[in-house]
Image (cartoon, rainbow, N blue to C red; front, side, top):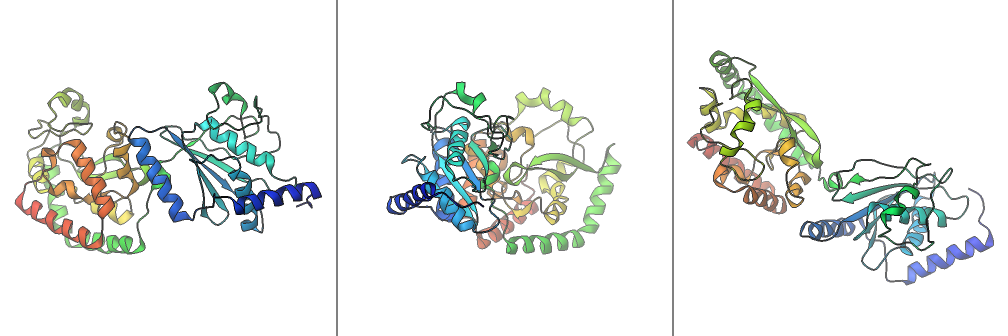
Length: 382
């Protein structure tokens, strides 16, 4: 890294002093995450969209010093409603409220342009909420063809500027969906519990699993297991396993039965579904059809207790606030399973899941497991 000129050093020193004196401070990761969660709720309740700008230092050494420099510069581009915080070592985040993707990239461009000559250029990523876009762009100062009509940064830059604010050597700009950012991975304790419980369950239930597999095969044509793409932690899809309870071609017949669904919202539930096989009804009432998902738990796709994973097509129809259930790993059972299932409206189902996420605990999970076992033995499942 080349030495700074006296003028550049003086300007940077003034920025650092102003930053240290000013009211804006870099929040720690916990407080910054809380700000993001609050802003998401505000957006879900009708508030404006927002962006998260992440700047990652590429310096080979002195990461803290580099982040301090970037933070000092970035703070001059933020409004009073924005927030600045650390995400991890060498990574800085800026919550830009009421800001378009274009506006977020303009802020990133201005920060990079203001870095002293010879400074390593940070990598920038823009996350937007809500959005369906999924493109990451890394910043690069060399070959930057970006231009704006004004030297003043406006977060709400008009759309006319979007084709001229590229930070990736003429390749355009974009954003990543923010949903995966809120994902809360399982703790080591929860993962260890799941591995032990799922392995023991598969071992001790293997005779039952074998018997059910033979019954499914003997009573209807088709495979023993039903595989379907469901939405997991952070919106990542995975393949769920169930004992097949419907005849072959049931998915193609679903469209003709949608008007008879007893579950409101995007989910489909029908008590006397004509597609169900002779043994399928019993398997559903007792929830035995779900037992192969112990393999999903063992793999880490699911956990013992958590919101039930919805098919990918159904989650696509959910409101933004309902997608908050994707913050945690889906489970075999949750509050909905022991609260009437199809008798509960879809919105209430989603609220039950969100309430579980807010209040979840080891003792609460154990209570739900016990209540689920009672439902299974009573045969009051769907």
